[in-house]
Length: 363
Image 1 (tube, rainbow, N blue to C red):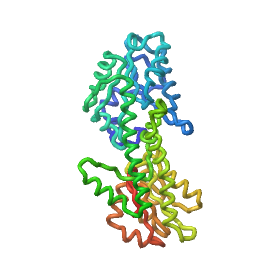
Image 2: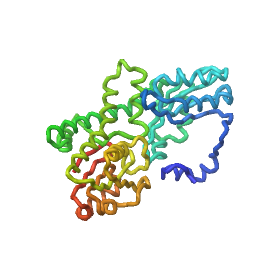
Image 3: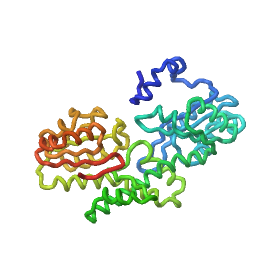
Image 4: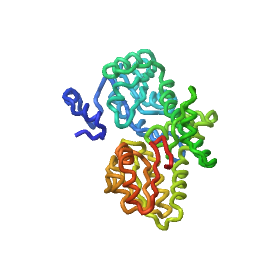
């Protein structure tokens, strides 16, 4: 049984070729190549990378290393981690990185819900300690990657992965801030963005309830960690996006003002639509804030197998209000076909919907 809830991964997992060549073990074998892909979470208070799992995983292979071995790190890491953390651990073996051992960083690029396809078809960055490391790593990934293999050095590879997610975070923060301005002014942020995007050199995203997942809320801090004096915009963007659940909770409170002890149906708790991943989900933070205020919430998310209700109509029945925090595709389809029926089941005609993980708008 595949332990990962990813249809594309399950297909590969059950493939005959996979079954013939794949094995799992609790011990580290002697091998020509080691790929390390472990979590690198954020220390919540210090806002720095927690690399203990990476350090332990690297240390676990030291006694098995032999001359000529290649070590590839796929985990997302702060710049200089390969040089200053991974390399010294590997050299406890008595072998020197760059001569006896080869080291490369090939950051993973995955889109939850389509992981196997992303592994195969995405372009991959290969950052080696030298040309020999790049050649070995590229030859390995060429066995299954159909996208381009882009060769660089370790530091650039580390930095590039962080830049990708920081770019998203900063752009989301911009539209979230603009959404708050629009609310203050009493104008529609959706209409304004639609018109602004008519400009040939403007491509604004949609504002959101916050930023979730295992990458975008975390990776920008890794850049700020290594260059605190040079990073002002990045931490500011992080603070804006982290504040959004409080902003959204405030909007919901205002919409429910005047209703005594409202019963509320809340749909969607994953960090984005149509996946079951709840890591760093801003929806859960909104739920927490509302519950702290004493609101009675019935929370359901059929994609995450949470709650008894499987449809918006079921969730709305007998409630004072319905809030859609994360619009999975079934919910969007149901709203398109049954909006009036859903509204008729509510005690008060209050339906508050937000867009995808990177979009929100009270409608």
